[in-house]
Length: 198
Image (tube, rainbow, N blue to C red):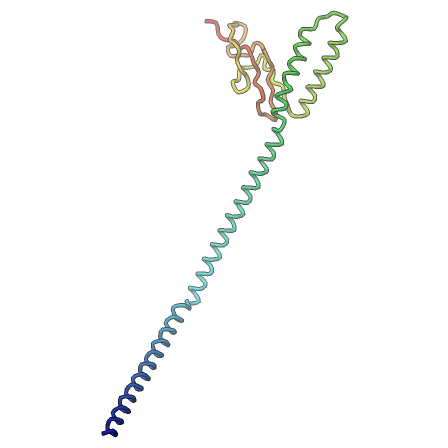
């Protein structure tokens, strides 16, 4: 009986071993098929590879062009900002100097023909001339629109006066001259404007 039990045990062990070997062989076959499938799926055809590479190159080229355009825009904006800062750095300072020019002009208007004050008047004239020369060198231009059509962009109307001898909306008198710096208005000219009779 012991022999029979031993034979049954050996038969069972052989069956288990055969089953294990069969299972291992099946697993290896499945694994090999899976690797082949993965390899086939992972390896595109040469045409697909070329198309993908061309798409990648096109995307990279597009990104490079966009980056270059952005860099040029930033550079241009920075240059414009620097140019504006340079051109208009004197705006506030020159605005503070304009009342001095006004006062020198008023002094000359009020000057009499008296011989005693003649040297003083000449000194004021020379001072005003040199002051206006310095303003001109710094691109500060005087706006003296007498006789010109009224322009609300450059002039500030102080009053309107009927005058049949002058066209309506013409500047007939300048109360205070205006100034511009590099084409930008610093101070509008204060003027009297003609209006039609009526």
